[in-house]
Amino acid sequence: MITAMSESSAIRPSAIRQRVLAGDTVLGALVFEFFVPGTPQILKSADCEFALFDMEHAGLGFETLKMLAAGCRGIGIEPLARVPRSEYHFLARALDIGMHGVMVPMVESAEEARRIVEATHYPPQGRRGAAFGVAQDDYAAGEVKAKVAALNARTLVIAQIESERGMAELEGIAATPGIDVLWLGHFDLTNFLGIPGEFESPRYLDAVRAIVATARRHGKGLGFMAADADWAKRYREFGFNMIAAGLDSSLLQSAIRATLKGVR
Image 1 (tube, one colour):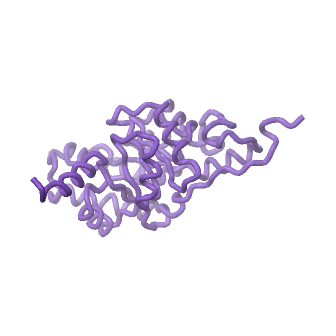
Image 2 (cartoon, one colour):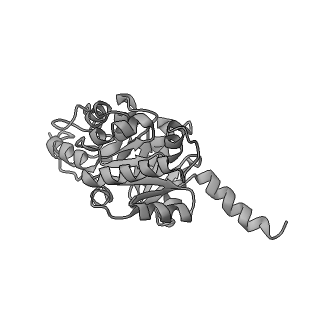
Image 3 (cartoon, rainbow, N blue to C red):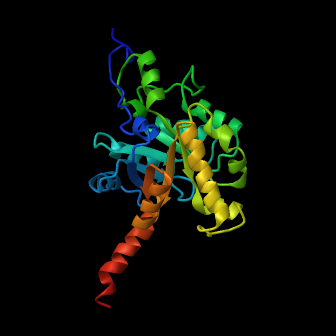
């Protein structure tokens, strides 16, 4: 009798993780509002390489996230989720239901970074609980040891640096094996630096340069959400290579407003 775990089956690899770590430009979208079945294909048709679904601010739950992961399956777009915080039950569950990686907001210490890596990776790299033959491996059979290695290699872990505490612990966070990307949380960072929304402030720009330099020193990718083409271009010039368009609701508003402006 052939058991569910004895047949061979390939885990879909990440199409972006190694490129992000190598400093290649990888482009996608951060989705806050449009959690509908067509969103993955719409983003793919807009030349996005990843879709990052927000659970921190948008009220997105795991059942809807699982549907969105299924919508990304087989179309060539990488499904990622920003979880609400760094607790195990957010991180491991997002991966179990089909996300290829997670973004964690407000990472503020090397110890927290280590806990994130443990929660998102199987042994020996981490302490994530086993779930095979489920959504993350396309409900397929396969040899467990091979699956563990493939899933550990696929998982993309993004730490958001967006507070004065995160800046103080920047070196330790970046040095943590298994943290792949430092993502600038620009609005929160200005808030916690006491200069809300002042994106030309020397204090803010010094922090941005420190994040870039630290990520490069440790071989990490650099992430940023751009509100428009000018922001995307500027932060690419700073050195950020994983860039997401967002907010999706604001981009829709801008497009509709521009379309109707001439006929009012």
